[in-house]
View 1 (cartoon, rainbow, N blue to C red):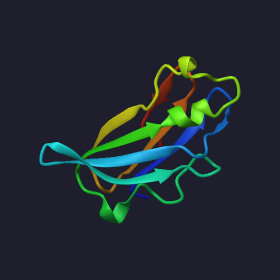
View 2: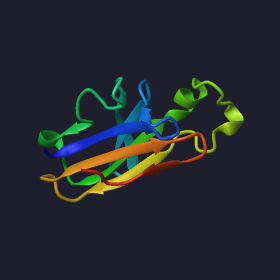
View 3: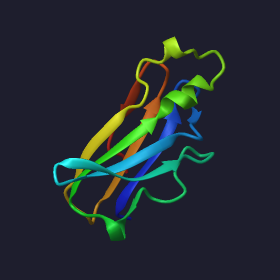
Length: 117
């Protein structure tokens, strides 16, 4: 499976993070162009790939994870608890035949990502 996929995990609670908006952008002519926004489902994943393999192109991409609203909705979490509000992950696709999976693990105090499989 080629293309771009993602999921969001609430590492503080050890479960998927549903209802997180993710903005997907592509670098074109030296500027970021917003392509679409998606929302994670009950499994913390998007219902479809962010970018299907058939549409993948070599280039730079960006995912902005709007986890602040998700975290603020959790019991016991206040705005002052949230250290990173909406992390942005920028990455390059160098081979359109490969799968680029970009998971986001979040807590009120940190966020982390990696290239998954």
